[in-house]
Length: 363
Ligand code: KG4
Ligand code: ZN
Image (cartoon, rainbow, N blue to C red; front, side, top):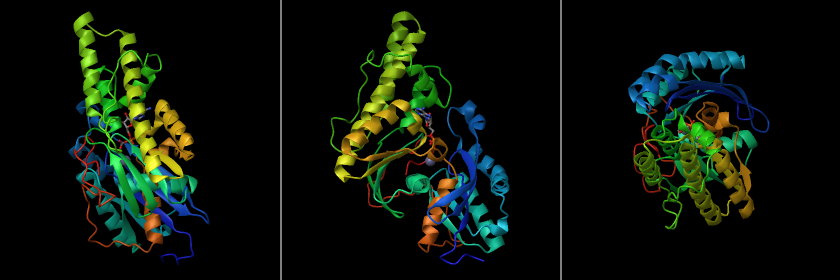
C-alpha cells in the first residue's frame, strides 16, 4: 500500500551516475526525514590505473553491485522491501551506462512491488541536501564544487533552480586531481594537495585568478592548471627536479588561487541574489581553506553558511531519496518510460555548459 498523503513515506534511493554505487533508506518524520541507512560502494581501485573514471568499467561495476547495495541498505535500515513505500533513482545527468543500470533496477523493483517510482536529477539531489540535513527553507544559494560539477544555483523550490554561472572548462576537483598528478601525488588529489599546501608558501608562485576580471559568476580552471604545469617545468629545467618545499609551495599557491576565485564569484552570486543562506556541496567543499573563505564571504553578506556533513556532500543515495521524496510529495510519479539521461541541466533556460568532464557530463 502506498501511504496516504498524511503518512510518513519510507523511500529507497538509488545512485549510480558516476563511480559510486549507492543505496539508502530514508524515512519521513514530522519535520524532515531520518536517514535509516546510507550505503556507498566506491570504485576508486577499479579506475586507479587509468587516471580517471572509465565509463564501461563503471557501468559494469554498478550492474554487479547495485543489488548488493540495496540489500545492505535494507538490512542496515532494518526494513524489508515490502516496507518501502517508493523508489527514487538518479535518472541523469551522468555516465549513461551507470545511470541505465540504476534506472533498470528501479523499474524492476517498482514492477515487482507495485510501488511508485520517481526519477531524480543527480544535481537536484546535491542541491536539495541542505533541506535534508538542516531543514533549510527556499530560497538559498548553492555552490556545487566536486570532481565533476561546478555551478552556482539559486534554489527557489524543489523543482526551481536558476544557474547563475559555472565552470566553462574543468571542475575544481578535476583541477586538484590534475595538479596532484603533475606533482606525482596520488589520487584523488584534493586531500593530498591540501595536505602538501599546509607546509607551503602560498605567495611564492603568482598563479592566475582566471575570469576574475570579467563580470558574472562563470569560472575557468584549466588555465590555472596549465600555470602550475609551467611553474613545475621551470623548476625542473632550472634545478633538475622538485624539492619537497617546491611541491608544498606550488600546492599552497594553487589552493590559494582556487579559493580566491571561488570566494570572489560567491561574493558576486550572493550580492546578485541577496540569498539569505549559502550552502556548499561536493567533495571540494571538504577543503578547509575554501570552507573558511566561503564562510567569511557569507558572513560579510549577512548570509548563513551551511556545509552538510561530508558524507552527504559527496555522491550518495540519501540525497537522491530526499529529492525523490520532495517530488513524491508534490505528486510526481514516473512510469516504465522513465529514461536515463546523460545530460540534464537543472536550469533548462541557462546556456548549455561546455565540456564532458572526466566524470561525465557536467550538467
Ligand atoms: O563529490 P565528489 O566526491 O565526487 C564527484 O566528483 O562526483 O568529489 C570528488 C572530488 C575529487 O576531485 C577530489 O580531489 C576533491 O573532490 N576533493 C578535494 C578535497 N577532498 C576531495 N578537493 C580539495 N580539497 C579537499 N580536501
Ligand atoms: Zn555528484
